[in-house]
Image (cartoon, rainbow, N blue to C red; front, side):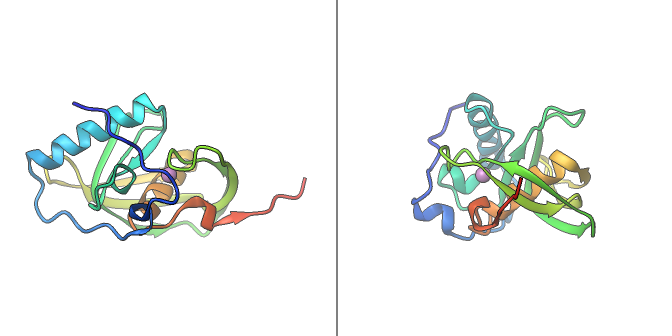
Length: 152
Ligand code: NI
């Protein structure tokens, strides 16, 4: 395993669209292992492959709940709740900034696990937020694109 270099805002790779993984192989599993190690080392609660310079649709998330580490390949949001939530976010690629973002409170995500098997994840609150944030990264979208002003 290896700790990978986390790309920072301004790096064009963060604004590029990641490609679907056509076949889950040992290389994909190595990437997942290295991404998880990099995320825990940072430390962070999620990481998307473009953040380590790899334009593949691969994410890892661990919000320290019962799900533990989630590793998802080709993740897709297949449903979102109408109910929204607002919360402050940060990003390992934008270390100096935090800001409030409105996102769906609940999402259902479909993807492949490290064995290439389809998994469906029903998530709410922080996990739903982390999944939406990481999936945005796969399309070159960063939380700073979605900031809202909070009036205290
Ligand atoms: Ni991020």
